[in-house]
Image 1 (tube, rainbow, N blue to C red):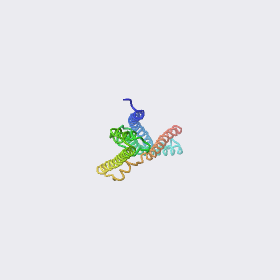
Image 2: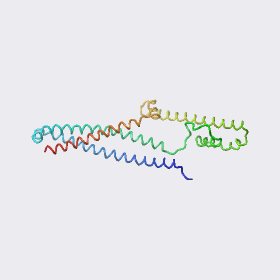
Image 3: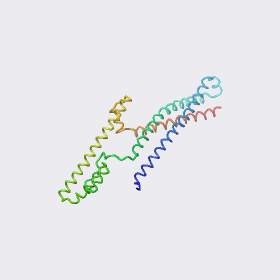
Amino acid sequence: MIDRPFNQIRDTFKDVNTKNKDLVKYVFEKSDSISLWIIGLAIGGISIFANDIGKVKSAIPASYLSSILYLLATSVTAGILYRIFFLRFYVILNQISDGIDISFTRRETMDTESFLKGDETYEGLLLMIKNGTGEDLNYLLPLYNNSDDNGKRILYDNAVKHYLANVEFAKRDTELAFDFVADTYSKFTGADKENYKRKMTKGNSGREFKSFKVLTLVLYIIYNLAFIIALFLFAASA
């Protein structure tokens, strides 16, 4: 059976998201190594200056020396903050990727909201019930076709009520599932159950993602730029 374009696109992006998770892990590890290396060099430079400040002052003009030390201190501080915030950013990225994977996973489930427009044919209504609940009620179609107007109306109204009742059941069942998950996690982690459930159902990953993305980018630029400028000032003062 040929696949729907919707399912093909969803599966493709699920695979892309899985590959991106591996890429994010690789970037995190490399970025962490580079930041650690630069922070180590900056601290080493400060230590050398501090241990032999007399000779350093005689070799480097005071104006240059002060700027270099401030820049190295800025690089170290921004680099440490970058590593702290980027760790949180990495956790958020993984949570978002997991959420995307769950959303893209192709598993049939009951409708948790009504998709009725009110103008469905009886055959279309039965198809909606099959897609939304898994029940095949097509055996009622011959009965509907052979009924009078009053019989058709009764069969149609009953099918609508049946679909809406299943939607309401699925909605309550979803709420029970979230409640069970939140209760389980709260017991094992000590987290507040209602707060955990609120994060699962509403969440703020998008807002938090944007904030930490900007913050880590700014700190990344600061600690690298401060270190590079300090190097050029040191070269200019030599």
